[in-house]
Length: 178
Image 1 (cartoon, rainbow, N blue to C red):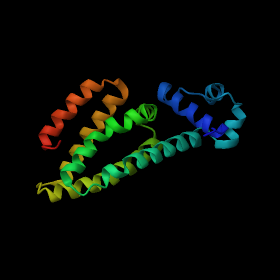
Image 2: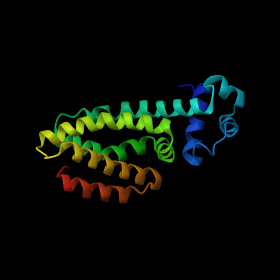
Image 3: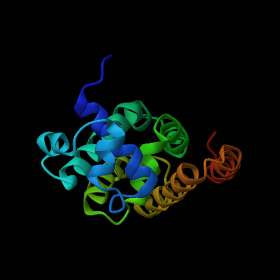
């Protein structure tokens, strides 16, 4: 597949935002890395904030495609195991996106898209914990998502797969899932 200039700009922005953060990445640096003029960035994306919004939306589209089968699982034990496995699967597929996402944790654009994604998972987890007879399925789901968020951050920033797998095994044993 041939990449368009827009695709090249998005990829350069993603990598630079992941490396330096949003505020520390001027559009001139994105243009240089993409091999385009700064004016072309503004022609396609209007503003740096709009470019960030498109980078984040595009990343979450990829995430949704990859994780769709994982979160639509009917078996509650399997769903919990899938949600716990998601950081490993998704970070290995797109580490730059997740590094960027965690560096942008305080940016409204990143928060908005992440919350929308997390809410879709939360609903399914509440149903799973309800089916399994947990006393407070909403709290269990929230606790699990906070745990997964921590795993996600650890793995995307450190990249220590062995440590991640050990932590994942410990958590799975507590939920009695494989």
